[in-house]
Amino acid sequence: MDVLSLRVGGMISDHALICFVLPLTKPSDKVQWVTCRAWRRLSRDAFASDLEASELCADLDALADTSADDMVQLYRGVLTALLDKHCPAVTVRRRPKKTTAVPPVDVQEQPRGASDGAVPVQISWSGTER
Image 1 (cartoon, rainbow, N blue to C red):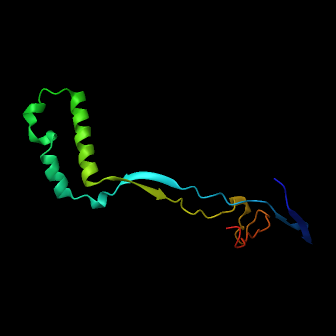
Image 2 (image 1 turned 180 degrees about the vertical axis):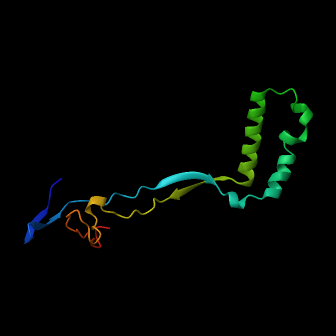
Image 3 (image 1 turned 90 degrees about the vertical axis):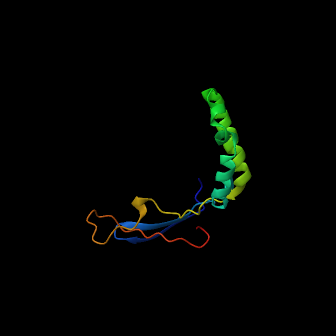
């Protein structure tokens, strides 16, 4: 990575202030498409009534000789059809959450009275770097 501008300031004791500019760009926000159901719009009473009238609940004696695999397929098919009717799947766009740039821990300002001899560093952001 190239340093665009490098400036060494005056000396403070045996330390020098170093200022530089790096050519960093903000990563683009990628849009994510998600398929989900609007569960709040589901009418429980209408769903329960249709479920009661479905093959799963209407004649339980007819299902006595059905294999487990066939029962799973029936269960999945009936419930998927009922959910598609009462709570259809929709595709929505989700934008990523904004992140805040946080400097690494070793660059943050040291607390007052730090006895390790470290020089406090102050990080400031201009409006274009956020």
